[in-house]
Length: 224
Image (cartoon, rainbow, N blue to C red; front, side):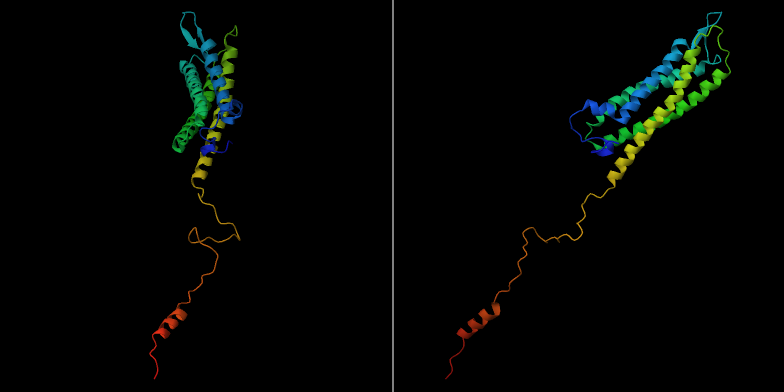
C-alpha cells in the first residue's frame, strides 16, 4: 500500500511521478478492468447477434436478448467507470482535503464491490444461457460468445481486487483518524517545566529577617 498521506495516498502537492503512478496496484487493476470490459462488450457486440432467415437479429445466448444486453451493459458501464477511476487515481494525489479522499475511496469500494457481484451474476447468466443454446453449424460467433463468458469470469476477480485495495485504503485512513495526535514522553526522560524560562537554579530566600532586625535596632530607645 502507498504511504505518506491520508487514505494511502501521497502528500498533496508532491511532484507527479508517472513511473510510480503506473506501478500502483490500484492503477494496474483499473487498467485490467478496463481491458476486460472492452473484450466483454466488444465480443458480444461484434458477433453476439445473428440474423435468422427472416432477417431478424437474435442473440446467440439461447436467443435471449436480455443476456446480450446484460453483457454489453455491464461491460460499457465498467469501461466508463474504469476511465473515471483512472482519472481519479491521478487526481487523488492532488486532493488536499481528507474528506474528499474519503469520499473517493468509499465510491471506489462501493462500485468495485457492486461490479464484482454483477459480473458474477453475468457469468452465471451467460454460462447458463449458452449451455442451452444450439451452436451455429458454421461456428459463427462461437469464439466471441465463449470469450465474453471467460472474460466476464476474469472480471469478477479484477473488480474484487479493486474493492479489496479500496477497503485497505479506507481502513488505513480510519486507523490514522483515530491514532493519537500527541507524542508520549520517553521513558526515563527529563520532566517538563511549568513555564518556558524556568531554570534549575534553587530558589534563594532573601535575608528579610536579618534586615528587619537591623532596622529595629536603629529605632531602639537609648538607655539611661
